[in-house]
Length: 485
Image 1 (cartoon, one colour):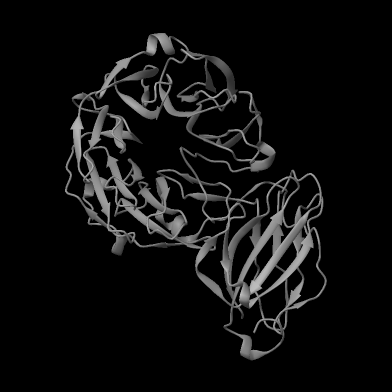
Image 2 (cartoon, rainbow, N blue to C red):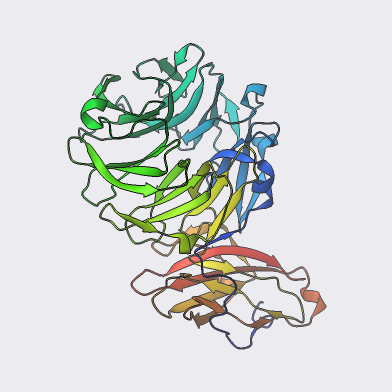
């Protein structure tokens, strides 16, 4: 039983561990060693957390695609050798991937590309993949999954080029795990692609970022697309478009756009007017502009914020819900260096968004979101043990309740308890402590002690916290397992 093992000393409130930023660099070993130039997140093994499929950078070596299984507690395991099919040398680096259920059997499959090759892998239902044998030799620089033919399943649209010219293509999902290549997209060499219902007619239109500007392709049905760029965009965003993200930035129910342009010291917001796009705010960047963009509600206030990666590092812009943005630099801290790839995903299963950066030449960085952040510390017999629970670092509006549970047992799989998140510990074996976060620390430290009993060495302790900021539903933190030393 746990109760005689852990003793509450004095709950020490508000310990300030580091600068009051919302994000902290904590890159797991398996992620660090995989050298992702690009990555996607998906629950491939059905256990409820986000695994990583990595497109390896130039210095990562072979194989060019790696699968990192999320084991919880901010740990990942490289299961490439046992979970992915053999890969050709042309899959060595770069490229993109999308993950979705293209068979309709309830698990997540993968469509992956690189310049010169495509791999379509079917999930056997356990996170192990087999090659479907699909062969294509186009050069694709970006992919998007969307229901382009209105039949209820997801197809794949690509942006790219080959020696023969543009390879902007639709691969039509046949519903049985196979795809039919349909050369239906007009336009020049494209670098980026996005899909959304821009015109409100309930089908998926396409946006292409080309070497000469933004192309709008309206879906006409029957896999026919019409170039509507002149009417929708005109001369608003000329030049090379590196990336495109789509979302409702001003809360009016339609879809606005942010584009990143090469060699331009700003990113461009395009505001949806109902029948076209109009110029919105210009968001300054470094001299060469952003390379990648990611829209997400990063501060959890109900509107969309913008992460940007470029030659100068990572930048955060906070949306105001009306289409405008302000700098979120104080939340990010300083993470300099080139960051051409960004992946926003919930890496630790605590309900907020973390950020993975990638580059062909640099090691990755995982920035962990410190909303609901548990730092469990290492329990050692005969020594103080001080787990710390963070709530809203840098901007909480007052003290609030924080809880910590320490157990000797964990659940086989975390159990969802909406809206509180997933609980992972066995409460039948738990001791629960309560505290209060302080200002400006926004954290609660729990000063505990492990008895000086040698028989406790090797005991597994399962640790999870909960925080309850004002006017927000209580939410569980990530869970961790610590072995007493």
